[in-house]
Length: 84
Picture 1: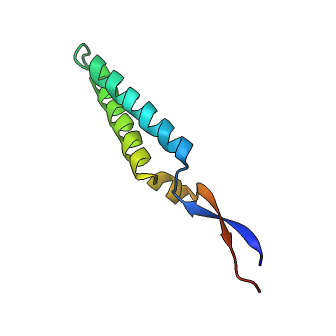
Picture 2: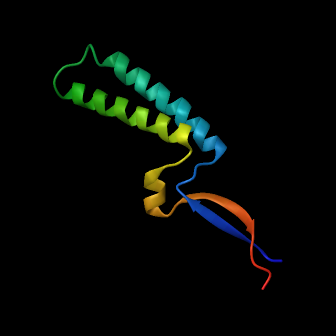
């Protein structure tokens, strides 16, 4: 039997999931904490940063990134192929 590597499009590895959850959570907390003292364009920047952090947390928890799937990236998986 031959072995070959497949890539599951959009799947995240365990290390990347942990980094996304921790980093995204940190980004969201910092952005939300800086939001009350801001005005003008800075408010939009902090809201955008908070939303990006929440997105990282959600994709980390789910283990799937739609952007990775669209780009054809993903976590490599090893699978036994057909024996022909």
